[in-house]
Length: 239
Image (cartoon, rainbow, N blue to C red; front, side, top):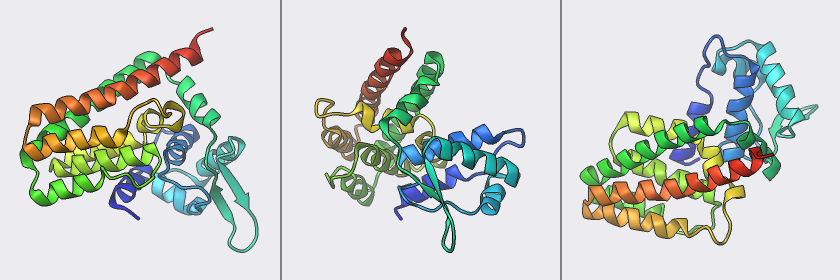
C-alpha cells in the first residue's frame, strides 16, 4: 500500500465527534469509496472494529452500512469469509453527492483547498532537497492511473516535501472531502488537459526554487478543476 493511500485511509477511520450520527459515517465511507481510498471488492473491518475506530455504537455503524448497501456501494457476503465488501460507484453516485452540496459551501471548500495546495507548493520550492525533487518527479510519470489517483499522489507528495505536518494533514483531509468530486472521472475527458504536463511544470518550478511560480501554477491547476466542478454543479441544481 502506498504512503499516500495509507495516510488518507488513516483520516477515513479517525474517531467521529460524539454527536455525529450514522449519516456522518455514511458520508465519510462514501467519499473514501468514490475517491478510491477503499477499493472495489475490498472487505471493510467488522462492525465492532468500525464502531471502535469511529468512536460510535455498533447500532450506528450497522445503520450506516445498511444505507451504503442501499446506495450500491457495499455488498454483504454470507458464510465463511463473509462481511461487507466495497462496490465501485457509478457516475450517478458522484453526481448525486455533488448535487447535495450548496454552491457557497462548494466554493468555500474549494477556496480553502486552493490556499492549502498553493502554500504547500511554495514551501516545497523553498525546502525541497534533490531527493525530494526526485520523489515528486516520480509522481509526474504516466503510469496509466485514473486521474483521481494521479492527482492525489502528486499533491500528497508535494505536501510532504513542504515539510509542514499541518499542511500535509490538511491535504490528506481534503482527499476525503472535496477531492472525491474535484478529481472525479465525471469531470475529466480527453479535452480537459494533461494532468501530467501540468504536474511537470509545477515540479520544474519547485526544482528551480521558484516559490511564486510553483504556488501560482498549483493554484491555477486546481482552480481550473474547481471551475469544471462548479459548472457541473450548476447543471445539476438548475431547474
